[in-house]
Image (cartoon, rainbow, N blue to C red; front, side, top):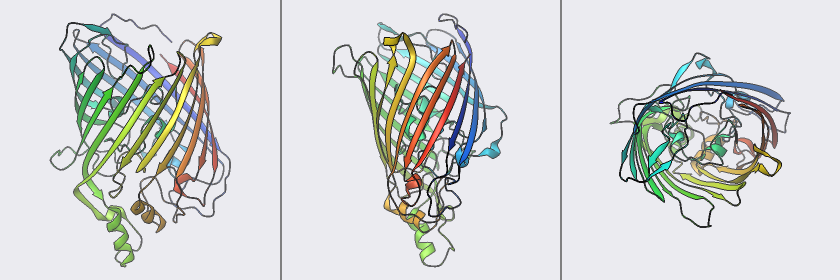
Length: 422
């Protein structure tokens, strides 16, 4: 909406993202406490962010963001592994009071004299020049998804896809509180054609909880990602990312909850009753993006986690596959207009399946019963640039086997997103 300086040492900007979603009634043989409601429903969410940053010198800066989230998602963001709105507040009781989203220091150590241009991004850095070979340190409150598993085609819920498993790998159970933030330290090495980053972060005290566990001896998350930028096609960018993570937390184990129920100890499967401090959840991911032409790009992700311990921080996915792309309308002199299409297929482990089939509840899922099938989702959007910082985006999801249940769905979700950048 307003022009921002590329030379000033400070940065102040903001954004407003409003998402309206609706779906008609759909087929459901039964429903449970955590089901996507089978009757037609609507939902409206709002996220407002104030971005601030200050650059002390050419290598040191601080970022400080305040945010407010209100409204809710369809069925209060329950009943789907691939929830259709990344802005949806998973715990409406948190309210609309502003909260600190990011407060981090970023330091760059030059390892070469040669520099390259860097576009200002208030969520990660406002530095405009970076050494080609460098070491970067970040520490403070942040979102791991700002740094790990990033993809130029599918990571921005304000202008790109809305689905949780489109903008991040569903199987990447990245450390975060209910809002999606954590306290972390990240060290990153970057060279001309490759980079390597490692992050240590705090885990929530309970699954999808609002409070972080500050005792890193018992609860923490290690994340490592290798990024390779090979020159496969001349003048066309290609990026490959290889991710691994290990979470330590007070987690429940599906097998323990199942056995306690089958032996009559518990009246129903309850994974929260079988948590143990120090359990480990680990996983791997692959993420790619490639420019086919100047205006057409493709991207994809593949992910897996061990699936024996409970989904804890992001969503209930143990295996995920995604492929898609976007296209800019530059030929029609609308370079900021874009369409995108992606296909996602999510799955869970056999133990996770049995737990839900016996009537267990996760923090997102629980139909009371389960006839298992992969949750398959197609999402498409068109982002229209109206004027300056105004964008309007119609969006649609087609979901087969919502919540991994063949006895429910399919369901069509329509969305309209208004985005304003200040």
